[in-house]
Length: 315
Image (cartoon, rainbow, N blue to C red):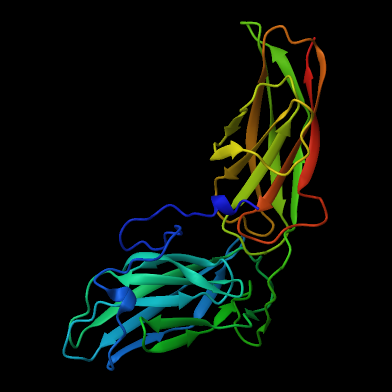
């Protein structure tokens, strides 16, 4: 669900990943160029530092060209933890090339050719929504970096404890199901000076897990009598459709939600403004339903991410 909202807008040169459809173009024939002997790669350990919510960290990748010719290939990075890849500094363009299980594989061109005897450095940031713990944790799989068609290096991902420690890490287990909790208040539409009716409500979603995702998406089904295309604030990209039960004569839309990943324990909110035409009779118009889900992430089975609310026209 919401797969059509997982595209990350292209970034400036050197600022990393562009999750766009289609094959990745690495430039100068790099996609087909194998790294010659003498081009090597090394990478340090990924330490994910705890914040108030979530974790961030980065690795430093060093590519050395010990050959006698410039090297203009690229690198391929497999993230150690699903949906944690952030930005790549020191690259040209980046984009997805596949997956290893749930982990994304990202290909990046180099910002500039590496001259004979020179080095190039790429810094890649990672972000995890997992909440800080009093103990360190280690990811069960390592990340990998591969020079296009050649040398490889791996790196371990460790969550630093909230107390600062890295020793005796426990295994990290990422959630495999979404744990979103959604709340929304009933809506009353009040008469405006021009005779139309207007009213709004706020949707609040809390993430109680660390399941992989890029951002959030929402669906909204409204009853007949409410004008189509209610206003979302802050706005997202919306389209017609969805999977919710829609009242007869009603309308349904599906929208992206701004803000990127939602860290475990954090909330995000947005508003909906509804209108009804002049002459609408006072009383209950019907029941609306909204649902929030992880984009490009696992689903949810407990129903806490779906909620119904009423829309009423005031006397």
